[in-house]
Length: 207
Image (tube, rainbow, N blue to C red; front, side, top):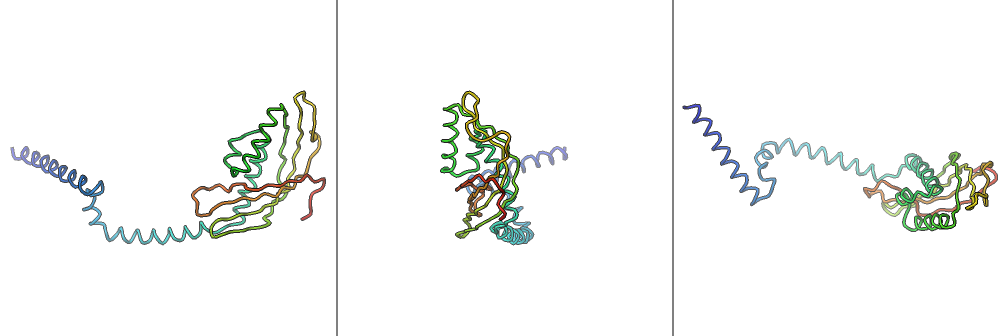
């Protein structure tokens, strides 16, 4: 009998505690039921938060620093993705990696090719050289100019399959100057292509 009474007492106490918690939640908000636990662990939590804050400040400072080596690796990967996407008419990749104005220019050329049934046969051989030429920034907004020296094989064919530009048997050296932009405070990890110029060279530039 005593055992049963003790068990019922526990149930009643749990029920009363549940009502108190429910009222606290309604009047103070969802976190009120944790107040006792938070009070018991206040000292250790304050220490942990202090340490975490110092680490966060250090991480934030580090994240705002521009690293040329890291940037250049990413820029080369973006360069290859963009030139291949443009050749293949992949609008999604272009939209993900370029600013609206550059994207619009790419799309106009792709749409024109499709409307005229022009086919671009393209092989990206690789980047021979990539060099940062200029870094500008206003606070955490960075604009970085990069020169890419790459090799490609490219030809343009009309609707009948006749080559109207380029050569399938000739490697071309391409000299590109691209500008990427990013706010280092942004949670968006992408450096967007904002400017582009290109020349086809018969010889590899020495610089």
